[in-house]
Length: 222
Image (tube, rainbow, N blue to C red; front, side, top):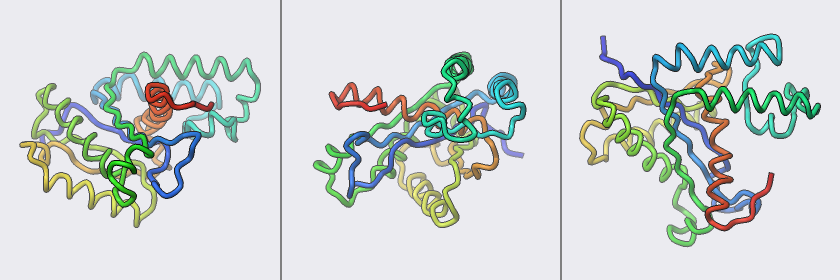
């Protein structure tokens, strides 16, 4: 039986990685890697998130999605009530703030990226390689090298999942970082898995993008 890592990584994105039509209101692509200690994830993160869902929805089947929450789209139309929205956001922020995890974030300003790399380069692939290398360095610092840690992505469809796994494996095959291929293991989970880690990664990606836009001096939109 493998000596699995004490950590698990969940990944989500914000913005699209197309360079053909760049959205002037959100011209960045973000890939957020959330690194959780497995013990804390099991004992604290998942129970807190489940308890919050029962508090606001009466069940734990709802899947947290940043865009739907921001737009108050069903099942988040309860957030059209300002008092409920304020309580919900306070509760959600509290869950995230009290959860023990680290974030490795890759933010690409797509206009600058296109100017420097041309229109054929893939921002997702660049962010993925950059992020995986730094995730590995973080795990190394925690003495986790060569202990397989799952890197979990949300499934986008069979074709997209295969392409992502191929790129992941290309990065592992070409890296010069010793121990990285033995440490990071690819995994894809469907949205229906209702993964707490993927949902928290989703909650982090857009705020990171907005923060970066302010740093770039770009106009931000709600």
